[in-house]
Image: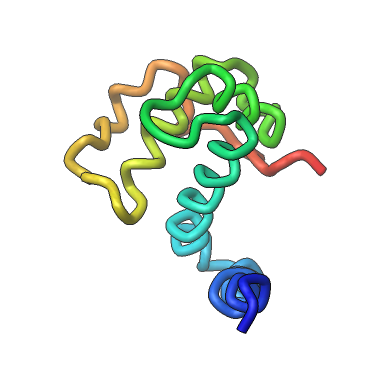
Length: 111
């Protein structure tokens, strides 16, 4: 099986099924955030180590409704630790968010 076939059967098709389910949002987030990180690391050239401004600039290109790099960083710091392969103990409490992320809506990617 080629890599593209693996991608389709392991990610694309299951993600499409979850997307169609109105209750699949959190499961989608768990699957998509690590894939998004890998994609953004490649786009920004941050292959290892800490994320830099280039990473967050690429993130903002996909999600311009976040508005600023600071909000993009805060979003990432809140949601990325809640996904697999990270220590959930580092997840900030909801009331620690200064930008009001918890009240933002429609953070869908731009076409």
